Structure formats: structure tokens, C-alpha cells
Length: 492
Ligand SMILES: *[C@@H]1O[C@H](CO)[C@@H](O)[C@H](O)[C@H]1NC(C)=O
Ligand SMILES: *[C@@H]1O[C@H](CO)[C@@H](O)[C@H](O)[C@H]1NC(C)=O
Ligand SMILES: CC(=O)N[C@H]1CO[C@H](CO)[C@@H](O)[C@@H]1O
Image (cartoon, rainbow, N blue to C red; front, side, top):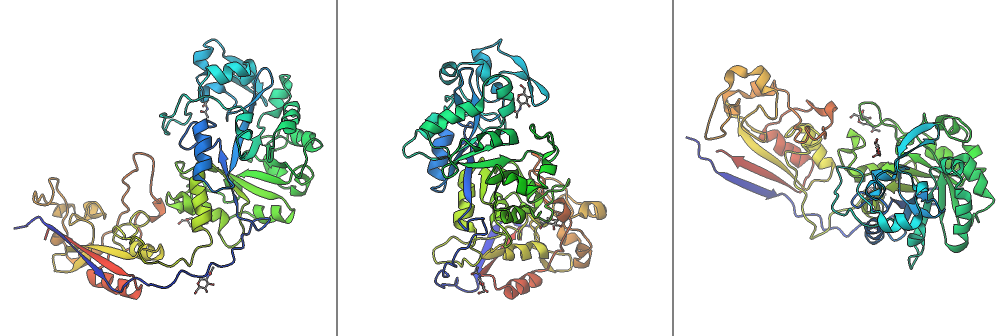
């Protein structure tokens, strides 16, 4: 008879090391100027609040590192005033269609015919007073919809003024439609401080080169996707990239999609880094990377951890970018302030223990040698083994006595399937019906609880590693000198 109860042993092998915290190494960042990389908040904290809303602005300032830079995508109204909004079509992130139901028009934007609602058809007073912001990424919360748009001066006029970055994405389009961003900026610079001005258009940057005071305002050339065409030179951005020294003539830095630095292949694996940061630094150009967001998985190599991704750009031993353009500035701030240059951080008294769940079971199939190895490498204090028994009495680690969830048992030992209601209602292939040598022929299987939501775990690790006996588990934990182990016994 099987009694269904549950108990847990927690064995602490050694008290946690009570070493004093290590001397902080003299932090030498591999940025161009040796300072820590900048956090640049795209539209404020736009990962949580509507892009360029007051909430997004306030929360970026209050939850990020002190020097956080506020990044504003400039749009211009019919009467020539500037406000912040990403995307040229207002209907994507505002209630403009309610305000002007018949306002849809078609414009040629850098060779592409676009239909929608455009800023340059509306007066600034109407935009600021009668139109509200909405979340434009549907997987993000719409709870904060309804706040008003921000004029550029709403941000630069704050006391103390935040460090401000103005991105002029559509110079050519506005100029062709008789609203010249250069004139706007010339006037704006007389009354407010703009620390950075960026644009993907060389013509514009060359144009304002004589206007800005370079000691107060840095000019940054923004690269778009490699195959996109730069409007002034009609060259692909990928070919402009080959001549960094020519960029130095009109800009002091570049803003590039993060894949320019760490390319990702078609299967979402990270490739070796390019030489871009080193090459640009050699020319004296700062390098800012864009495209960071906690909720847009970048590559399997990061295991859905945005901090790991940031560290790849700022703490890889070879180079660091000079700034990170992100929708989630608090996460980038944490990566810079707490995690970077901190490999030797030792445990100090009073910190919570890190206990693995079947080893690093999000990275490798659970309860395998590789999963436990990874858990130790990742800094787990306690590794865990849920004990199961084979038919011939070998105790081993696996989450469930039913082998069908964690291994390929169903395809190979179909005939041994049984229904045991005391354990679970559905049928399974149970460990106590197979010998240990039979169990060892099974391939462990990586669990994928969020596959339906599109969050697949590393497919290359799908069947990696091997199951280990309890004895091997104990040996491994001794060898790796983990602080403790957790033995879990269910269904005894
Ligand atoms: C990313 O992961 C793949 C598969 O595990 C590996 O081959 C590749 O070397 C990793 N990339 C980097 C830059 O570490
Ligand atoms: C970390 O500790 C190791 C071993 O004590 C040492 O060799 C290494 O220089 C340290 N690294 C840093 C960044 O302090
Ligand atoms: C980025 C984005 O949401 N773009 C959308 C803007 O709105 C048009 C329709 O008006 C869509 O086609 C775009 O995909």
C-alpha cells in the first residue's frame, strides 16, 4: 500500500562562509571614457507605462540609477512644436482616432507610402489637451492608458532637469512637409539643455553640426537595420558601418541595434561578438546599444534573464558599450550597479539561500548531472534531489515517480504503462517498474511549461545530460562543496 505523504530533509553541510565582503576591485569599465555605462530610458519606463507618458518619465527617474538619460522620440506639430512619441503614426499609441475620426491621411515616409494619423496635421494645443496616450504593445498593461502627451519642455523643464536625449527619427519626412526639425532644434537649444541629439539621417546631423555647442550637446548617429537605406546617402546602413572614421566627422558616437554587437542566428542562438565596439572606440566614437526589453526574449543563451543579457554587453572582459537604450531602465540599472564587475561577491551572513529545483531545470533536463552542475556554477547554495526508486532498489533523483514527464519513457516503455490512482489519476510509466539499467537507457527531457505562450526553453539542451543515482548526487555535492543539499521524499 502506498501512503501519500511528504517530507523533506535539509542538510546543511557547512555553515555558510562568513568571510568579509571582498575588497571592491578598482572598477575599470571598458567604456570609451572608463566611466560606468549609461542607462537610457526609451520613452521613460516604457516597459510598464505608455511610452513617453508622465508616469513613464517619473518612474524612470525614481527607479533607475541617478544619471539615467531620458530618451525622447521627437514629433512635430502643425504649428512646429515638439513633443515625444515613438512611431510616426499617432494612432498606434494615442487616442487620435477618437479626436479626429476622419483624420487619416497618406504620406510618403522615406519612400514608403503610409496611411494613418500624423503629428504634422494637428496643432500642439489639440494634441496636448485633447489626445491621450495608450499602450501600443498589446502584451503590456493598458492600466495606465489615458495620460496626456508630453511636450519636449515638459521634460527639459523639470527641476532638476534630467539628462535629456532627443532622437530625430524622421528629419527628411518633416522637412519635405515644410516643418524643419533643424529650425525647431535651433530655437529649442536657446532655451533648454539637450544633452544628446541622435538621428538615423546623416544630412540632418551634418546640418546641425554647426548649430550645436558640442561641449553641451553630443551628436549621435543612429543605425537602423543593416539592410535599411540611409535617406541622405541612399546607402545601406551595413555599408556605412564599414567606414566608421567618416562618422567621426559629424558625430561623437553611434547608437546601434544590439545585434550589431552580439549577433543572434536564425535559431535564436548568440554568435561570437563583432569587433564593432573596439573598432568604434579606436576611432574615439562612443557606442550605445538599443533594443533592450525584459519582455522580448533575445536569445536562448540568456535563459530569459535580462540581466545576463546586459552583462554580456557591459561586463564580458573584452569591451563595454557606453550606454544601454532600454524600455526597463531599473533592470539595466541593477545590472550596472549590482551585478557587473561582481564575480567574486561572496555570500554574507543573513542573505537568503538559493535552493535549486531539480538542479538548473530551466536550462537542462531536470535532475540530470548537467542540471546540477549548472546549478552549482550559477551559485546555488543548496541543490535538491527528489528521490525515486527503481525496480531493483536503486535510489535516484527525479521530480516524479512517473517517468513520462521528465524522460522519453513513453516512447520506449509503452508496455509498462500503468494506472496507479494513489499517485496520479492519469496513467504513467513508473520508476519502480523499471530496473536502474533500463532507466539509464531513457533520455531525460527538458520541461517546457510556457511553450504555448511562445517561451520555448533552449532546444539544443532538450535531451542533454544523464540521470544520476542518489549516491552519485551525494558525491557530486561533496565534490562541488555546495553549502547544503535538499532531499525530498514523496509517495513513500
Ligand atoms: C550560445 O549557445 C549555443 C548553444 O548552446 C552555443 O553553441 C554558443 O556558443 C553560445 N553563444 C555564446 C556567444 O556563448
Ligand atoms: C576573484 O578571485 C580570484 C581568486 O581569488 C582572483 O584570482 C581574481 O583576481 C578575482 N577577481 C576579481 C575581479 O577580483
Ligand atoms: C509598431 C506598431 O504597432 N505598428 C502598427 C501601427 O499601426 C498600423 C496600423 O495603423 C499597424 O499596421 C502597425 O503594425
